[in-house]
Amino acid sequence: MDWALIPPRPRNAFWSICLFTLSRGDRPARGGRLVPAITERGTSGWMLVVPGHTYEKQFGDKTVAPLVRLGLLEADDDDPAHRVVSKRGEETWSQFVQRGGQFPEDLTNL
Image (cartoon, rainbow, N blue to C red; front, top):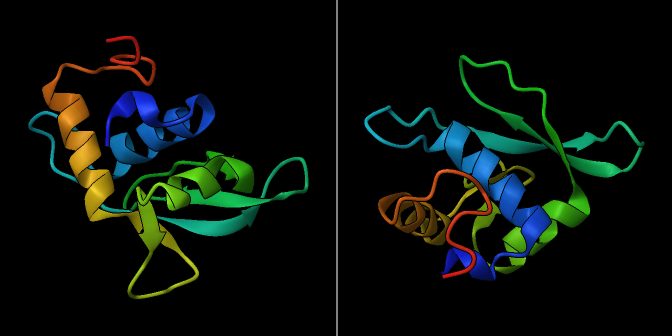
């Protein structure tokens, strides 16, 4: 999927999710998943859980839902209540990094 086709707020969230779970460059991927959580505003959302790393960022359900609809995130095979980056999401992230993207808004006006 072309990076520019991801809506802005979900794109920012996807960038953070991929940076922490898939990494970039020669850094090893850490893995991780989104688990259901209640946001600071009291709405339903997701928290990113990465093994060996404390990351307290939460994403609202309305931010994550488009990523699921676009096929960039999917249910975790081990726990369907959790979300992980899909194969399509991994390919999208890889293309973004290979094309030189550094920040969420990069490559959106090509």
